[in-house]
Image (cartoon, rainbow, N blue to C red):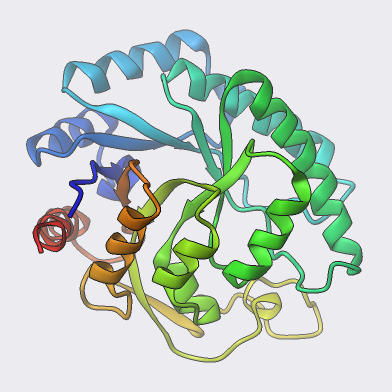
Length: 279
């Protein structure tokens, strides 16, 4: 098995910045993903100072999270969100990384749905900007089946918008097989999140993500549950094997959004991934 570099989302530690970086370094991982969803509060000097801390601990930035919690499904909000996303990409390049991870919303399965064209227009502009600076906006998997996401990405005629592959989201939300989805999305995968979980209810993603006001909203904790790596329904051996088969060489970046002891969960996650890769 190819020894994929392992990363950790820095905020998953829930520790102060420097303490979290030093903790990650002590685990012997290779990289970190950092959050930057408030670009107006950052300066180039701040980013370079943080990068110095990261590099002095022998680590690199695998990706930057630039998610504003809205997606790109509402045309009236998109101009501002697009410009803020571009600024995140600028700072990402200062972090010596090429990947901004984000959620774009739920891609409709019907290409004639009015939201489809709105999301297309936004992502085409993002793709053009990413291409111009040598980066990627990476859409996180999960709100729609992999085949639907692939069709959407194909329509952009660019690799500037790619995929941040999260196997747990596919399992928890739409019940997709992550290994098969890797092959479906193989041309677009530029980053991954190592996360696990289970699907509790068969809910329409439009409902889960609150896109139909006539239905129940905020289905997190109802429709699915995140688990520690190895305790959910993601087949990590099959998933990493599929990544190896398509020639992916990037990071497996551990994401832990819940749990009472995140540091302990991350420590066990690093060990779990190393055990998987050793098989």
